Length: 393
Image 1 (cartoon, helix red, strand yellow):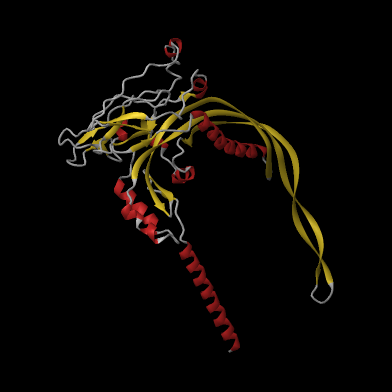
Image 2: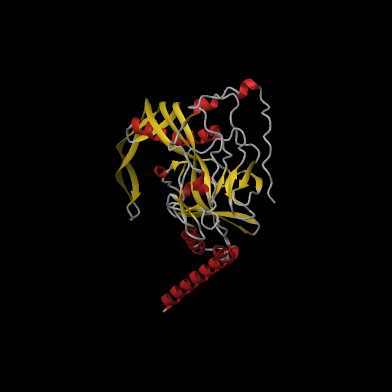
């Protein structure tokens, strides 16, 4: 049954607040773009983005349509301007209403895009929760579902000590193409540091050893030691596109290990790239993302400080970093994701939809591990027995 879209609700904020938006160049876009029709004009089936191309393709008749939409540019936003907004956008908001472009059914979801549960049609936002920042760029899918599933099955079958049930996952579970939100951050940093510079030198030490005949003898050896000197200085670095996962629904270590990501392949965001796939909405806000990005920057800055200190060894005691020209944007990255349940616990496996790299969580079979340990002990005992018998002969 088709459910009509809800009537717009009045804005509860004072009129002065609603009529004074932030300047366009500093306020990220928070509204959905023009809606598209993803029905094939030839046969009426639902079209989907074809990985590695710039077209929407009909899975039934093969008809193609060029990807449209987007403004042709990828804009980054001033973090300082965003932080200064009187009512900062937040990610911890309610679901949005999406409508199927095929059968017209509507539903509420916290996903950014997806497929209709009734007909498989493309779901497009009818309403956008206030304050949600729209994506600026997307790295489109380059790997189709079949090779992604083959890579997943190969990974599953190569796991040592995996339960037998896991071996069947590849043929019984489907993987889903999902765009995962990420923040990217740019910044110019200036850092004052203090520390120590270590310089190696050698000393001759004398020590006494047994001569093997009941006596002793004196020997010498060269020992490396380090002299430490105070150090202080200033380093500067520009950061570009420091990547931070924007969702808590996927384990960060899985996504990080699935990289690297071909960020130069990012294109201006267009809803057409999402046709046939799901897309998660971010639940990590820009300020929380920046805190993560600063941790990543700090590790690089510390390396810069050590290089500046010089010497043979370095110690960094303190770093005082100033951040300027901080810019950010929301970027969607493509993953094939498989989730499976074993022994009451859910495990995730992700396939990089550009490189085909497979990273996943997996359970271990205690029985297989125990049998392997027993087999190892039996083998070790057999080897020892053979050696002992050989010596007796």
